[in-house]
Image (tube, rainbow, N blue to C red; front, side, top):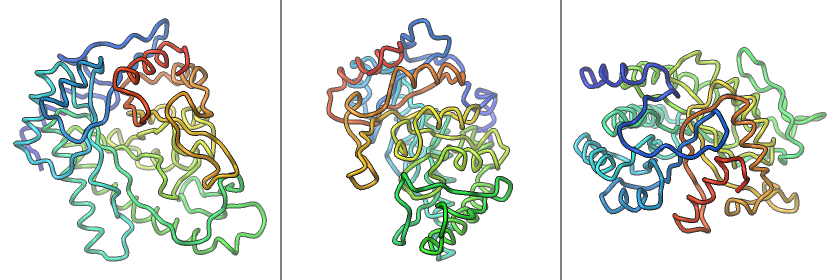
Length: 326
């Protein structure tokens, strides 16, 4: 645990998702919108060269993917970012967690890694850690357009996944319910650690074959009834299951951070589409920006896309933030 250090961080972040005005980083131009978005890139480490590159491109912050960050390294990364005038706002988790592993030792190891990640985020000055708690696969699953899950809003038990005969998907339904059970148990154990660290554990909608529609993912996050468990909403993931606008509205009040990428819908392709550079897909970014305003989200948006230079990505983010599309 991080007694001593954490106390100061908790007081600095009285409400998860509502961060204090940082001492470093430039406010982004959001046009006439009341909500304020801040642009970040994703990088493995916050070494001086990376921090300077991100700052030079006009980004305010960075999200780190480096795993196994020690206390000393975390403090160095934080200092490097501050010197460059940017902020480490979040850490990605220790890979995709295995909270639903069959082996109890593997489940324990995965939970312990996430505890370490929360403490490392504290040292980096980050307010969130992205978590993919579990994944399932290797069995028959419905196509995205056929997927119409029915679940118990109280217990989160998945009842069916398609209209009509669900016998072909019995194994998937059972695996889904098992993963939900172990995820809920693991996250409940992590909440006190997150609270002491002053770092929110953010569950991401991602390609793990779990909670793939907005209402289900929102119900999972809401079930913990904790300020320290939030949603990390990826605006490009799971477009094949529901429009981005539906995801935003379902997770209103739950979202701590956003990722931005684009998805081209095409039912002839696996997963009924594919990821493409921002602005070249099927997402209506003008509409998405209006819905961000509608739900009142202000905060960080980390760009998770390719195909452009840092400077070009910054220009894309400028247009998106102002409501001009991508």
